[in-house]
Every structure is written in structure tokens, then in C-alpha cells.
Length: 309
Image (cartoon, rainbow, N blue to C red; front, side):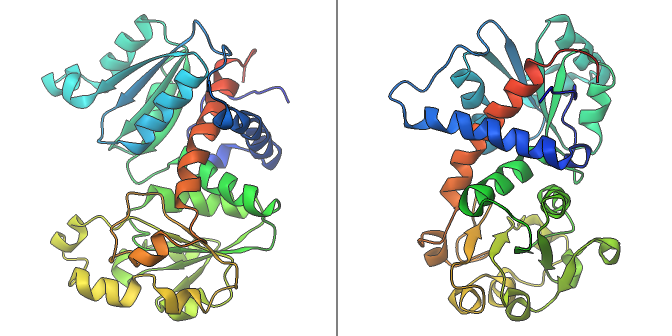
């Protein structure tokens, strides 16, 4: 397939055939994970700037490893070490980066729309690694790729997303992508952690975790941002864990081979029990592995494209 997109800003811009092309490319790169030398010269001589204006360990490291395994040169720029802390605008930072002639910029930013802002001004590929509450397309792609590796077709599968939906870009991107792949999506959260317009989403909404867990094929827990308690949206972490923390009793209500997922890092004993994190049905470490090969696939597709979008 000829890749037409210059930038990856949200999964909504991808068609189902394009999603499957990403998965197919990631699948080919997966074989590299088993080699003693985990490197190919595919992107040798090309450069990627990792512009993370918001704290990140997993996503940034995953992109760094992905780029290096394709032999690309990767350069990291954090907000604390950039001119943004000196009052420079995002536009001027972007133009400065473009003057360095990178082939791609991976951006994470606390403001929704920051990735699109850069994409509209830069000639190189821009990949959104998370912008505000808006989108996290690479996380959604790696989550669905992980399930694709388990099941093949996701059509007709039921996925429960559990946790802080209101503030989660991961939840938004996953709902869009899973629906594109034919899955049914359920959401479960306290009412204070559901988006105001959730009734317009193509999902089933639950406030009772036991009801939400019945008959599902996979349960995807979200990281609970502990500052939500300070914001007054949660009465008490212990109460949240008792009511919305995933435990063995909920897994027993799901399909017998239910898969357990989490984007990480996990607050053990809050979002889910420690036993579930480490159980045989957990795909949490598989998601980490998938993250590397999916991001390798994205760097390859976006950095080797030819022609106009």
C-alpha cells in the first residue's frame, strides 16, 4: 500500500485498510525482537526528533528504541531543556527544529491540538505521542495490535475500558480505533470521571463494574491520575479501589479467556489487584513489546512515504 499521510495526529484519520497495513508492517518487524542483533539499516541516515514537552518514560523510550532499531538517528528534546521554559512560543520552537532538517518529529504536549499546530507548519512528518486530553494514537494502535496478535479479527469482540475516561486521551483514541475494527466497547467509571458528552459516544456506559465485566473479551484499565483526588473528583483512593478496582471476582464474570490490559504505569491495588497484573491472562508486557514494533512501523511508513497527501 502506498502511504499517503504526512502526519499521524489521530486514529480517526486512518481507514481500516491503513490500520491493517500498520499491523502487517509491525508484524514483520516483530521478528527482529527475537534476533541477537535487533537492528536493520532501513532508516539509516534519517533523523527523528523526540520533542516531549510533557513528562514521559514509556512512550519516549519506546520511540527511541524503535528509531534506533531502524538505524535512524534520534535526538531528545524535553521542555525542561528547551527554550519553551524561556518564553519561546511553540511556533518558534517548531521552526527552529525544522531548520535542523529532521525527517520526523514525535511530539507530546499538554495542550490539545499541539501536534496539529506543528503539522500545519512543518514539512517533515509529525507523529502525535499524546496531546492534552485529545488523542494518543500510537497507544491505541499498539493496544489493538496486541489484541490482533491474540485473536486475529476483533470483529464482534467486547472490550471494557475502565477508569478515568474523562481525562484520558488513551480512552478516546481506543474507542475510535476499536470501533473501526468492529469491536464493541463498554466504558465503566465513576460519574465524576465520565466525559460530559459520553452519551454521544458509540459505547455502552456502566457505573457498576460487576455489570460491566459480564461476558467481555478484554478489560483495559486506565491509569488513575492521583491528582484527581485533589481535584475533588474522587472521595478517597481506597473507596475507588473497592468500587472500581479490577479484581478476581470481576474477571470471573468475563469470558473464560479474558485478556487484561493497562497502558502503564500501574498503580497496583488501586486500578487492579497485583495478582491480575502478573496473571497469565495479562497482556501488559505484551503491550510494551507491541509498542516498539508498532512505532517502528509508523516511523518506517511516515519517513519513507513519497508524494503528496
